[in-house]
Image (cartoon, rainbow, N blue to C red):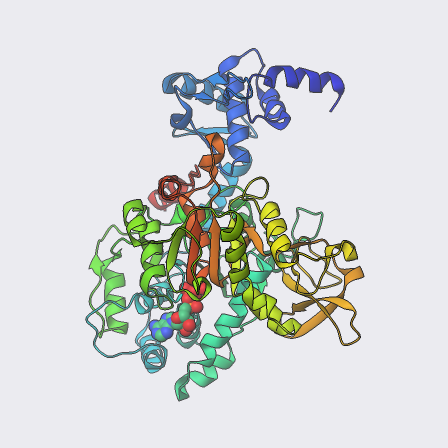
Amino acid sequence: MSTALRTQSDKRLSHLADIEAIDYYFACQFAEVTDATPFYLLVALSWHLRQGHTCLSLADIAGKRLFDDAEQNCEGVQFDDLTTLVKAARELSEQFGEPQQLIYHRGKLYTARYWQFELTVAEGVVSRTRQRAFSDDDYDRLHQVWPQLFPTMPMLEQDWQQVATACALTRDFAVINGGPGTGKTYTVARLLLALQAASDKPLTIKLAAPTGKAAQRLTESVSNSLHAISGDSIEGIKQRIVTEASTLHRLLGMRPFSIKPKHHTDNLIHCDVLIIDEASMVDLALMTRVFRALPASTSVYLVGDANQLPSVESGNVLEALTPDDDSHDLKVTDALAKHVHRLCPHLPGIAVDEHSLTTVFPLKVSQRYSGKLAEVAVAMRDGDSDRVLNLLTRTSEPVPGLMELEDVVLMPVQQGNGLRKLIKDSFAALSQANSPASALEAMNHCRWLTPVRNGEGGVNTLNEEIERVLQPNRMAGNNGHYIGRPIMVLENDYTQRLFNGDTGVIWPDDSQQLKAWFYDRHGELRAVSLSRLPAVQTVYAMTIHKSQGSEFRNVVMWLPPAQGKAASMVTRELIYTGLTRAKKGCVILAASERVSAVIQTRAVRHSGLAERIDEKWAGA
Ligand SMILES: Nc1ncnc2c1ncn2[C@@H]1O[C@H](COP(=O)(O)OP(=O)(O)OP(=O)(O)O)[C@@H](O)[C@H]1O
């Protein structure tokens, strides 16, 4: 950027907080700076895209003052009423016609890029939702395997896993949505077997997830689930199921430093079925690439928890596909209800709604958790802060045995001795480890999670504080490495087969050389020389964002006090994601008012995807 331009933008932006030069230049492409309404509308659109929205909802900004900040001496912009904004947005959309770069549609302003992404994903979903008819032979084949997949005794309570499997079988697109431990992978393994059983040819199945870690977990849990299913009629089918999952980037053939993947509309991925796990982490652009790279005949099943944090990049695909109240009673068309009844006559009937277009099949019962953790998670998911606070066990300072707990404990942010005790308790297993394998196992015993990277209660400060307590005599040098240092890789290194987010531990090898130890994809322990290690950081504590897709026995979640705009960054979805990383117990370090306020703060992502899907359905 030339100095003259920078000065110009600085001047125009000086009264706007949070606005960057990119917002200014985006707006300048289409509007004169002097045309206040369209210009600031476009600045707001660019800012919203940077916050993860896929469009600008005019109703959301109409009549409001935005980008103001008294501390920074920024007065911000007062936006006009809705009618004036709609008029300006329409004019922009008409003016920047073919090829359209700005699109106004039903109260929202889009860039062509995100508008096209939404159209592509909507098309990919709707074109796959017609109910597939099953022949008598298909039902015969499914009836043979069903008793090996699921219990077939008459049941009084609904078995949502069977319902989800039976429903998903009939269509080429479905979402299996459920909270932690509700048996999503258990259900996916059975869906794969049922799909293969119903098919008269061997199916090509691909499993994928948005991160390497999630792909590794999917591989392990699908193979464990398949291993546990046995029976004469199932063995042959099991042989045909692949269990190796890859990242979506690898599946698409994304190349470093290139935005064009190997697979796209003209070079499709050949598969009959694609399962995408941890779908809440998939952003709109990535989901678009996936649909573009798939033949129309490929069945796509998304698996995830729509209540978790949205993807880092723009768009919240899973949430847009999922009804607001996902604990809703599932209602399906008469034809689908009849299909489920024919396959599962032992289950209670499902409510019928002839207009139901649902593609989302919920799993509602936690199979892994019981007790407090599950109860708090449900109350938190439902936004019931009073119930959450009633359920939490309160203590003012760390008590013995805190790290063996199977409970959710609320404790004020600790200082001094209290903090030292909590740190020592949290990492006792790691301190007692006597080999790289036991240290790696101990790293899963407890992880500290925090919403922020910097400042008070941020990852960096917490890791430094924890190191001071656990390693008081640590010598400088060795690049900060010491025996038992838990590390997280910060970048992909294909030659070392290490990927962003991989965790390992520093430990000496047989010749007393310090090495970094990791488990590879096959569960084999391997050592990497420190000189070949890509960038890493200490990982006693990590951000909640980074923890997505991981699980620990215990979680200590630190919610630093926040004021002003920073407070709205910590949302219900964020702490729900943090809490549900714990398998047994969670300690929340915060004041109760802060917990309550966070539960009331939602991670809103404006998107038109649900509307695009409805429009496609209406026109289908
Ligand atoms: N119907 C069931 N009967 C018995 N055990 C089950 C059932 N469903 C799930 N499980 C067990 O419960 C545990 C959690 O299941 P699973 O891993 O499939 O859940 P998930 O929803 O995929 O979990 P996550 O939140 O980790 O993604 C597993 O040990 C699984 O074998």
